[in-house]
Length: 92
Image 1 (cartoon, rainbow, N blue to C red):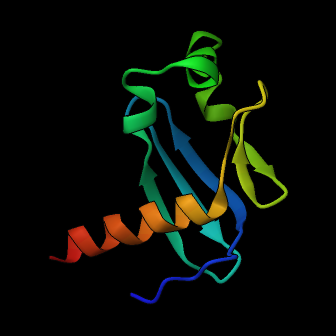
Image 2: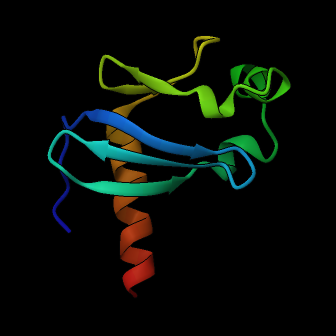
């Protein structure tokens, strides 16, 4: 899969707080559910605050990044890299 740097998250299609998965659509049309459990299974800092406040499913798009009300933001290029890795792993 071709890596697309500079892509942005266009919309959050859904978020599941139990599995720590967020379904996103990027601005180029790629739709994927990204597993964010590495950040939220043993959360620290702002990730911990998201869970304490029960705000995982309240994520939104802020300037192309995935964000939460407490100020936590995930870089769209990083999300895209994780998405492409998960897709490649699933195809293998």
